[in-house]
Image (tube, rainbow, N blue to C red; front, side):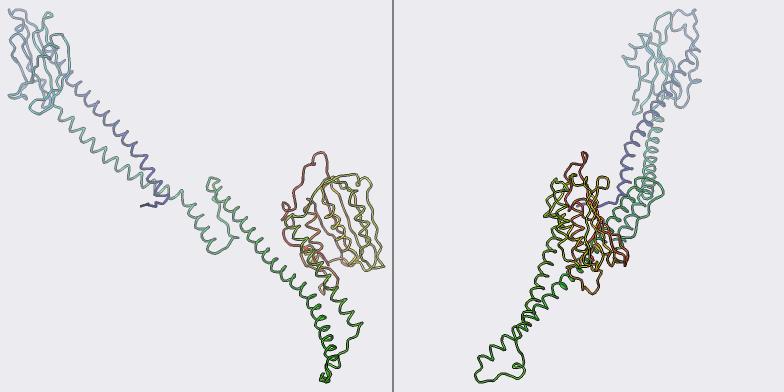
Length: 522
């Protein structure tokens, strides 16, 4: 059976568990100190009484016997209810004097006591007389160096034992009170210390229940561990909010992407199916006419005639739509490969290995007869090297130049390549229709087109692919455009130097640089 205690109660129990040994040690120390002090005080009292008695003993030399030369005082003068006195004559082995509070009792005189007294030793003894413990102080009485008697001063230990018993009860009661107070204070301190944690837990629970990731935990004004915990949780909540927002945006983009793909595929398929249905009906009608000897063809069917030119036009339309679907599927495949980094093989190449040929081949892309095409390459750039996938960069050039041709009915398209520090700078400028600022914000989104009517040919994926290619090469692409004046696409790709001749990361490591799905103007 497991008992689950809160941290508050566990801290309280820990405080008490630490205090109990401390109280035991302290109580034992106090008890032993008091017991020793009382014992010393009792011994000092007995010693003082014995000395006072000794001072009053007089020596008279006229008597023939040694003992008779000692004149003893009245011992009752020195006695009190808790002090006994007794004088023993060794020569006659009798008690010659004792205090009245002894009554009919006498203090014991053992053989060992006589031996130690004969040796001139003053000593203490603890004896039991009629079940009562007595503390004795034995003082030998000598005359001319000869032992003639023994002075015994005693006191019962019952008073000291009673005091020590009261002390034990006082220490026990005080320890319980101290333990209770410590537990209460410890519980209160634990409650105060854990209150911020409870508030943090409550806020986190409310955030979890309400799914409000924008809410934050209040940070205590004191910069302690709890403040650091609150800041850490707030940072985690911020990252969760960003991740949730990114996930929601990705879900939104995914749904829109599926919708756009469905729309882009449905249009050519509808055209193809319509043309094929019409051709089928015309062919079926003709065959039925040729094989119907009875002449049962309807008037509507007899009105349908197969024109070879119309048939050729319908077949050509179907082939055009098939080509469009092939391009769309190919672009989707390329974009998927770019998203995952698959298909890029970055190798160390010279700029001259791919750029001049790419610009020359781009001139063959379809464009209006009123559009001129110019290129300009910095000769020093051609000898520079960088890590690149030449096929992907050639596709990048095609996409940007083709995009410029599409949106330039007349004018000029200029491609300039130069070195900007340690970067290859590629500028594709046109004098076409340009773009308003609101269009530029979405220009790299998939299937986005500046032409709402979608009259301009294309799949709507070109610039998205271009962005992924640039990201795979750890570069940057941006656009600057003015409506009615033209656009300029600027691509920056890192060149190799002695310091950065290390393999670059694949495009999968660059995901999130622009954060999301993107596309071109077409």
